[in-house]
Image 1: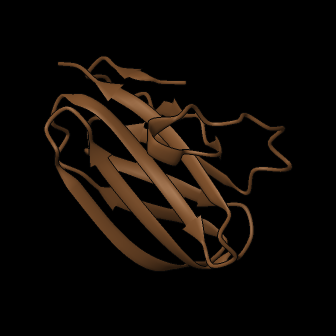
Image 2 (image 1 turned 30 degrees about the horizontal axis):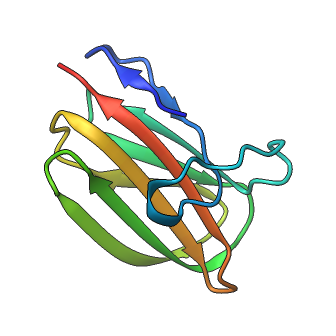
Length: 113
């Protein structure tokens, strides 16, 4: 699923689900089964990720598939909010979380001016 930004301050929810191999749609599960929630704030050019409990070492990949902009980092995913700053460039964005046990969570959203 995708969310579109309209330049306002309201967050755009990024639906995160299991999957995400090669841009495939995420499998949406009930919130209790997906330990990650995310929202994009256009006024801050920031994705806020809420880990519902400690997940340990997590690889986070963020990509603008339209422009090819890409970043990857490994974080200690402790419970709570974690900000990820992006350029805010227009395009189709994906965010992929790979847990140390190999489970992959994937979300996507679009930025329009």
